[in-house]
Amino acid sequence: MTQGARRSGVAVLGGGRMGEALLAGLVRRLGAADVVVCERSAERAAELAARHGVQVLEVPEALARAEVLVLAVKPQDVDALLGLLAGSVDPAHLVLSVAAGVPTSRIEAALPPGVPVVRAMPNTPALVGEGMSVVSAGAHAGGEHLDRAEELLGAVGQVRRVPEAQQDAVTALSGSGPAYFFYAVEALVDAGVLLGLSRSLATDLVVQTALGAAVMLRDSGEHPVQLREAVTSPGGTTAAAIRELDRLGVRAALVAAAEASCARSRELGAAPNPED
Ligand SMILES: NC(=O)C1=CN([C@@H]2O[C@H](COP(=O)(O)OP(=O)(O)OC[C@H]3O[C@@H](n4cnc5c(N)ncnc54)[C@H](O)[C@@H]3O)[C@@H](O)[C@H]2O)C=CC1
Ligand SMILES: O=C(O)[C@@H]1CCC=N1
Image (cartoon, rainbow, N blue to C red; front, side, top):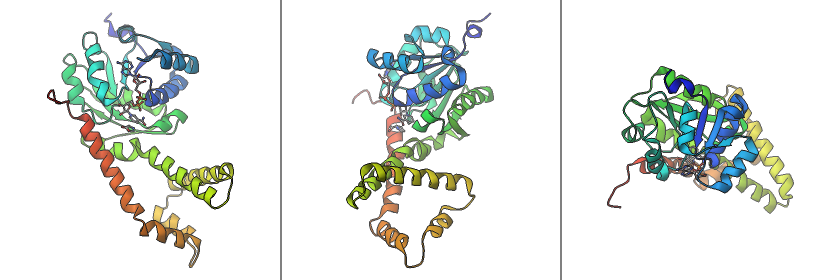
């Protein structure tokens, strides 16, 4: 029996915000016995163990135990982590990286030949089973590896396959995207308070409105413009509000925000310059 045949389950390497969101969904799907975590901060590791019932292991033990290794450290910490993996990872593992910007070629170059790498971009709504992820295969990853990655990320939401060249653009929409909606909600709640509502009532109104709008966008089959027109009565309140959004350049600001996120993803993924 090969060493790989004795391994099973998933090791999440890096238990920060994204690592925990994935961990939570994977524990729901696979059970806590099949998910382990490696986390550099002892305090954070204890928190994850208490909250999700998972075992915290050092990297070498996790590699011996788990078949799938989820790289969930910051792009700036990827090279150091790959240095820890390089001696013991082998082609029977699957390396699933969620690090923004980091190309599969950079990960493959740091590992022994033939190790399959899948690059993914999930998002934090994975924590509540409503994540949106995409996956792309590296040079040594085949259909079975993409299937496995899709199955695991499918435990925490929806998954699409994209060419790796689209990963930075995806990061700008669904990876960073939850923050844009949280930001809009924050601003609208403040607006409610300005208009004299209690913060608690304003929060309930805005959050339920966001949820209702999201479900209509997903389920109605209608274009966002049609849905918006249905809210906009002639000479009414919504038209007055939308005129202000246009006057203040909110549409252009959203496009610029997505472009900035995409550019930053590319920047984070570039191999560090040894002269920096
Ligand atoms: N936060 C988000 O919404 C999303 C994040 N990502 C990606 O996920 C990765 C993690 O992001 P966050 O969770 O936001 O960052 P974070 O800073 O919250 O988490 C990173 C964690 O990795 C740990 N860590 C660093 N080096 C380690 C090592 N060698 N061994 C074990 N643990 C180590 C840190 O202690 C920290 O808890 C990044 O690459 C990011 O691009 C991807 C999609 C969405
Ligand atoms: O802000 C970041 O860099 C990460 C990647 C996508 C969402 N959060």
